[in-house]
Figure 1 (cartoon, rainbow, N blue to C red):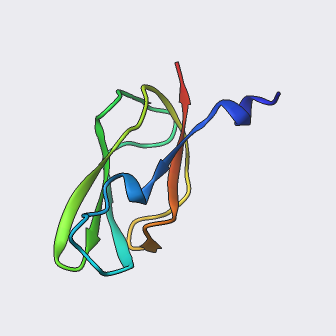
Figure 2: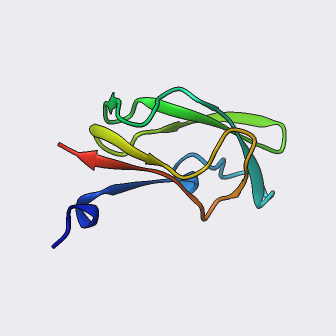
Amino acid sequence: MSRDDDRVAVAASDAWPEDVEEEEGVVVNWFAREGRRVEDGEAICEIQVEKVSVDVPAPAAGELVAIERDEDDEITSEDVLAYIDPD
């Protein structure tokens, strides 16, 4: 098994507002950078869906090893935003 198989995906759906019907949003801001340690539940980025801005929490503690979407990128609820290498 490769090390990549152990990574935890940070999905946009983890923070997508339930009452919002819009299927597209935008990455507004990254609070964490690649190579930085993050804690479980820590806000690592902000997305905007319709006129609602929400923080996306880290689903696990560990090192943020890959950011897949840049600030101002359009996203859907199905997108993976980043990967964490958990402790």
